[in-house]
Image (cartoon, rainbow, N blue to C red; front, top):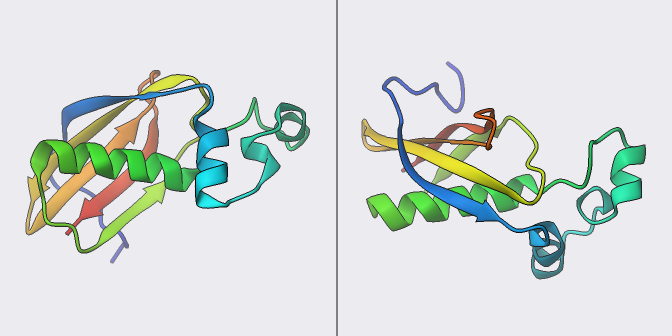
Length: 122
């Protein structure tokens, strides 16, 4: 069995998230996660990235916050697969639905590409 499992039903848009141009810098300082691919353009490009990218954990936190704001689940466990990079500034769209005993969710970037896949809140 895959972990986390694939979603069985369609996910519906539940809201958008505006990601500011400075989101990675702010998250770096608040979370105390210092990796220059998130804050130094030259370093990120030298590492083969198109630009600095938002931390996966920041993308997850923003996504879960949107689901909680809209669907109001009790949160005990969060699972997901990180599936893509988030460049800044950008707009993300969170899709979710109640499935089984939890909430299934995924997050897509402005191009419609999945950046968080197989998300589950239980």
